Length: 327
Image 1 (cartoon, helix red, strand yellow):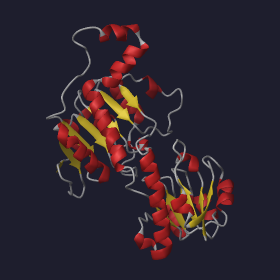
Image 2 (cartoon, one colour; image 1 turned 90 degrees about the horizontal axis):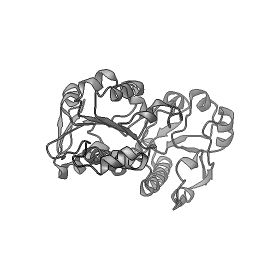
Image 3 (cartoon, rainbow, N blue to C red; image 1 turned 45 degrees about the horizontal axis):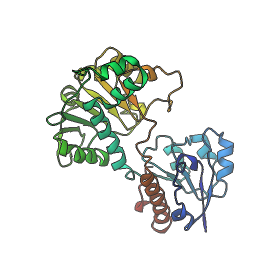
Image 4 (cartoon, helix red, strand yellow; image 1 turned 60 degrees about the vertical axis):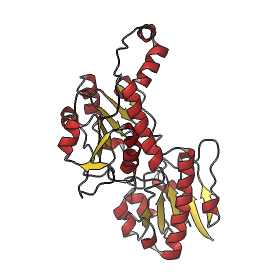
């Protein structure tokens, strides 16, 4: 039986109910390590010795580590969508295929986006925080004419940067019953049902909500900075469920503090992620965060394991062309 090693299972299987690893263990002899995050190259290489498949979740595999891997390794499975943590060139030079799982949590991530939109339209979290943390907040709660943004969604514009992918299309479908007008940026010009392709500038200037959905790469790294936020309406909100690196975080905080935009929700931050305990991001009153939970629903994580198993089986039975190889 082929041998597979999951180097940081703790990133995947950490909440009750426990996930089933049987889809992988029935096709491979599976060794699971709770965490190899932060381990030096030698430790990673040692744990990978004799394995044909490495399974990782958002763990860095740099060129030096990949160059030192056992010759038995032929497949690296990134148990997730993003793969900027893996040196693809180094893997290709070693003739190691790298695959990801692009469509296991699309609905869950889209739900997070819509949750943020619904929160902003009704100032729900703002109200909860104020009433639970201050007497002043409780006094406001008791007053007529509550002084927080409260508005309907029908007729508002939702701009999805890179939103013609799977998650963007899910968001669009969820937004439709609320009457949101959805525009996207698409370099190819291809858009999904209910979407209109516009320029980046038009999207930023006209949207009431701007949600980022493009992958992190050299073209998108730091794409959202002061210049882009200042194009947005002062009443607009920014949402990021993609990768923290697409945002110049200090510039976002500055724009929020100076009321250039009305608020932001970040399911992803940094780098680093999570932010350091003294990061000023925690003190920004009109910024809300969650700890990268978009993909973490129990059903999504089990689906992820099932799809990793499917990739492994297809790779050895049918070759690279049968799975989503990214290098």
